Length: 390
Ligand code: ADP
Ligand code: MG
Image (tube, rainbow, N blue to C red; front, side, top):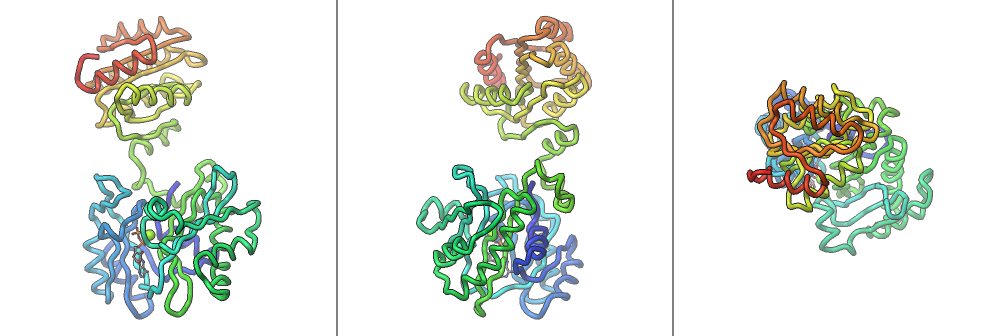
C-alpha cells in the first residue's frame, strides 16, 4: 500500500526524522489558513497524489504569502496532474500539502529498501537527490551508494559512516545523518514498510538535514498489524477495478491491455498472461478466481471484467482441479445475463465437469468460441481483440 506525502511526513515526524512544518488542505480557504499558521517565510504548495515527479509536472509551487497560497491552491486543487509516474491519463488532485519553504544548500537521495538479491535490507543514497533516481542509476550508476545491513534488527554505526562519507559528509554531518537514518530505518522495520524513501533530503545553509519529500510503501500482508497505517489508505488513489476486486476479496491486478482474463489458480493465470503476450496480445488484468470459488464469486469476478471499458475480448481459461467447470460456467452465464456481453468470449474449460460446463455455456445462447489448448485459447483471444473472428 502506498500513502500520501503528508501522511508519510506524519510518520517520519513520529520516528524523529526532521521534516518542515505543514498541514494538509482540501480547499483553497483551508490552504490559506494553513499558510497563516506557518512560521514567517515562503510557503510550498504541493499536490497530494500517489505519484512522484510532481515538481516537473507543475504540482509543487512556491508562494510568498497566505493569500498567494490560496491562489495557488485553487489552481492545483482539481487539476489533472500528469507526471512520468501517473501515465498519460494523469491523476486528479484532491488535496494539497501546505508546507514551510526550506532553504536548500544541496539535495540528496536516501532510502531504506529490501534488497531481494542479497536477502537483506539496504540503504541507498546519492548526492544526486531531487531528481528521478532511476535515471541517475541508469546514467551514472557510480553516483548511487548501496550499503546492505547485515541483520535487520540493528543498524550498525559503520553503515551510517559508509553512507555519510560516501555522500562526502564531514563527521558532524555524518552524526546528523545517523539521526535521520536511525528514524527512517526504525520506521521501515516497525511499520513493515517495503520502501522508505526521502527524495530530496536536503542540507540547509545552516547545516541541518531535512526531509522535503517522502514516499512510503507498506507490505499489504502485514497491514493487519498496523491499523493506524492501514487507515491511511486512500481509495481515490487506487485503480477502481482493483478497489472493486478488493471489496469482494478477489486476487485481481489491473493491467493496461485489452484482453480480460478469467482464470483459476495463480500459476495458470500467469501462464495465460504469458500466452497472450506470446501470441502478440496484451492482457487487461490478472485474475485468479481461486480454487474455492462459488458461483456468486465467479459472477462478481466476471462482472468486474465486463465493467472494464478497455476490454475488447475475454478469455476464460479454467482448469477444473478443485474448482468445478460447471460452476464457473454458471457464474459466467449469470453475470452475462445481468450485464450483457458485447465483446467476443473465448473459453477453455478442462478438468472436472468440463463437459457439463461447456454444455451450460452452449445452451446459454452466448456467442462463445471454444478452445482446446492454451496456445489455441491465446491465439483466438488475440484475434478476437483485434476485431477479427476468433
Ligand atoms: P516530486 O518528487 O513529486 O517532484 P518533491 O516534494 O520532491 O516532489 O518536490 C520537488 C522539488 O521541490 C524538490 O526537489 C525541492 O527542490 C522542492 N521542494 C519541495 N518541498 C520543498 C520545501 N518545503 N521547501 C523548499 N523546496 C521544496
Ligand atoms: Mg521528490
